[in-house]
Length: 368
Image (cartoon, rainbow, N blue to C red):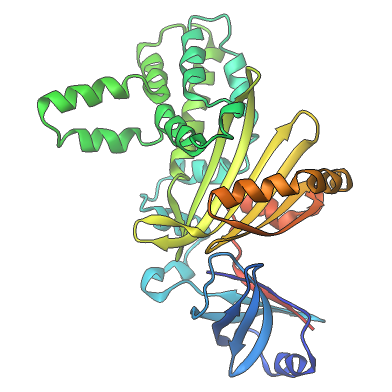
């Protein structure tokens, strides 16, 4: 539930800026919001035009602090919910990350949390190439069975295939082991056999048996793969203070070639789940024709806005004009109205890149 930024204000807003001091606490109330993410917030009885995050809803109230006062602009930094905050505001960011995920303070875990979001997404392909022609070639076969094909994701079962991929990789491996202990003997044996076909089991088994690890590079490759998978688990179904946050580095198969895809999702919490009707989704992947492409999408109720980011956004703008009618039709079948679609420069989209690396928006920029 974030306020993304405040639009060009009138003379009255400039007067308000002069009254605010660095560090001052202010209560923000969201009083209006359109399907395109624009709206109005109220501070001290004054209404200000604003750009609102997809998870922000009409009626939301939250505290902010005035920060980064500069000529022509101002930053309001949102405070986390007090009942969930604890002592987070007085400890390092690493501790906040661990607290968010219910993890122990462990240097290895801190390292995995910090390195996974910024790791080269092609590292998986490079590591697996090191296994070709070795006794560990079976790991490649296991992994390819887990990865969905790009052409199969456009159908109605695309989402199910992605979820099945995460299960086959073993991202819920330890959780399933814990739940297995509560099952009756027959069900426990069935679940145990099911766990044995996951990529994580094959990886742990290879490390345990030391088969094919005579060459130091092979052992190092497996350890790096395990660290990559463990880092992914730490960022799966995690949190960001009052919001839910999920970060994925997901491989896809396109014409038998591994294609790394980055996905970030932030939403309001809906019980123990993410609120798919009020969320922001970021996707970035390498394409054969357009190079790196980023998709920044915001869902609010049944409305959807999309920003397509490339290094040749002029060509992308022309391409979108051709496919827009069909795109609207496909989203309508899913129950969403595409209210806005625009293009942008991927290299200039710094906030989008930060979002893909696990950084959530923490405030609101106000310009005079």
